[in-house]
Image (tube, rainbow, N blue to C red; front, side, top):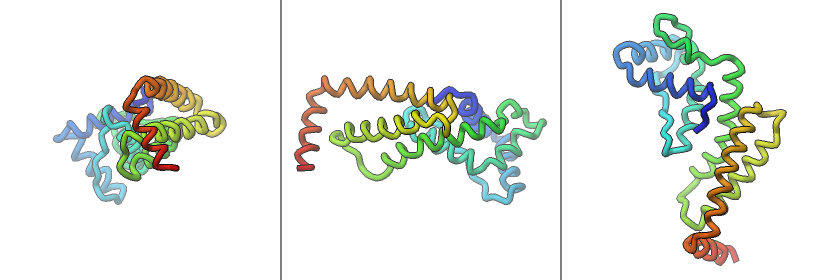
Length: 176
């Protein structure tokens, strides 16, 4: 979703751990045990499931101790994926930005009539987050700005679709 260095690092780290069944996966299990935690696997970031970015960021933040244990062991060769303190902060901010939209779409079954209200909701949340430059890193604000630009592009396409207009008229008739 975002090409920020901290997000790139956690995606690469997850890939390496998942695909190294003989070295890194056992070390991952050991790191969890050393931290006194039940062993869990990192959720994958799937490009066709935008909420998977939230799931991965949320998991990494919750399990920072085993992640740090893995990236700090020189013998594992994962030092390049270690997150600096400012990257941990940025990852937390990214998670917070993605959280609202993820929870909104997780609440129930969505249909075509809900697309425009959903896009309005996401636009409102992202506008609020983007304007708060004191709370969020400038990189997060810039990324949200790019997301809003893409969202607006698709929003404009709905004006050209007869199906969307029909769905919206049905949605509005249900409200009144």
